[in-house]
Length: 101
Image 1 (spheres, rainbow, N blue to C red):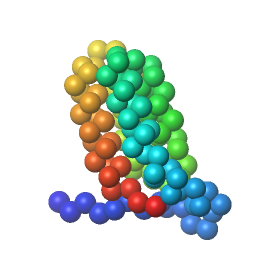
Image 2 (tube, helix red, strand yellow):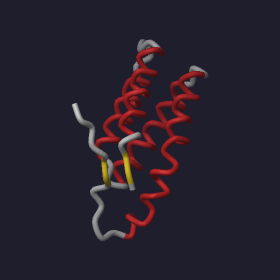
Image 3 (cartoon, one colour):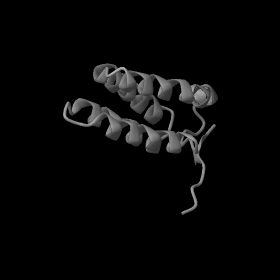
Image 4 (cartoon, helix red, strand yellow):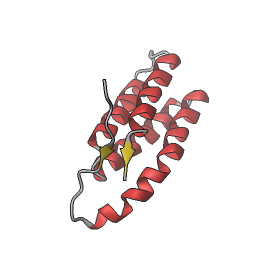
């Protein structure tokens, strides 16, 4: 399957000028989620994923928001194995790699 870049759906908006900054900060935001999971702080991971989900949608990257939302939901499930959370983060990273300003 060919994976195409994901561009913002924002058009003629004041927020569009901030899209580049959002894209540049994605690795850091994802790193926070990974760090929280690694330190077994599911509440922190859930909060970071929730924030990324909202920001992704707000900047016009709905697909990325779906991946972040999946992590948020998985973190809320206390019985979810940590390796499953990391697999979801890997999926988020692969999606983020396609995001472009």
